[in-house]
Length: 452
Image 1 (tube, rainbow, N blue to C red):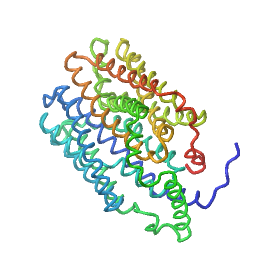
Image 2 (tube, rainbow, N blue to C red):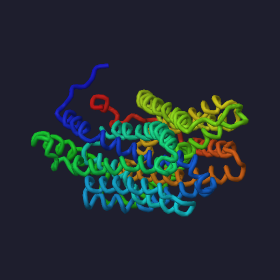
Image 3 (tube, rainbow, N blue to C red):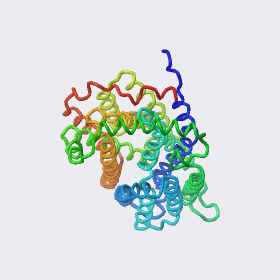
Image 4 (cartoon, rainbow, N blue to C red):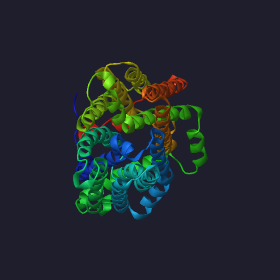
């Protein structure tokens, strides 16, 4: 396939990408680590402090609710004070709040501190996505967003492995291993926040590392992109946008997305305890060391890391969206059922790998749907609307798993429930007329391969 010639705009966009995408990736990665490390800490923390599965699940839901309530105010402040200062502030405070979780003394302090982490981190993900719109025109953002999304499986794999080792520090200087985990995994976010304060640039016009010609080229590129967006999205369409967002078809798609993200979040937070439960005396083996639990917990995330770009590439190559959203959900549901019903630990782990890969692979494809289902004026609002349903799913599913674990004593019923949630979401997609998904060709994916 013959590649398109690189333009001046391509070169300056590539320069901007090399300047700070690595930093945003690291920030995203540690944000996911600081969200999910409580799942590894729970392996010993819950026992030490007498925290039940339901109480632990309530702390997970409390985090999501706090994050949700503070997300919009945080984004409004970002626009007022600038992305550089606000993203740095978010990273520093969430790192400090996460490190402070080493002081947890019981169920109440667990919930309070996880709420503080949610408040501190609120607005980072949408704020970073908004920041990218200051630097990249519309047709370059799809691949940029996908690269940043890869931070989640990387974080879950790396975080699980490192966390398993840190729990092994139990007793060093008189501290429990899970306390070392929170402290040592929270501090890197503080350091990255300081780096962001001095390394990020609010707008292209402020970039001293761009030449005047490069600034003019990028400004012209963004101006033309904004003009095209304004032409497609005229002023005075607020009520029409609301009507579009609450249309039957988009509500069904958002519901399916909430089911998907809820499953991905439940996997990330409960995976260490599920993996640990596979290694019981009934399985005929001794309890595994915690570092091995971390390594095994990383395997599903590593497989998801491979599956995501391949599945996204295939969706773009085939210019198809519906089945690339629905099939992974059914496959992931099958993985949950296998993990819940099979008796071999290896087969159960394989089921968790399938569930993880299915949930993560479909995630970026869903973000292509607002541009297919909604008119242009509602695309940006549609992505935010999807995110709201995703947060709702992330808040509910871990709580459901915790309650069912307490009532049944095992994770089998919880995993079947997660499979049912995925099937419900996939069936909701079938209620959307298939003709809506007929044209998935998008200008957003036409040139990114040249740049990234």
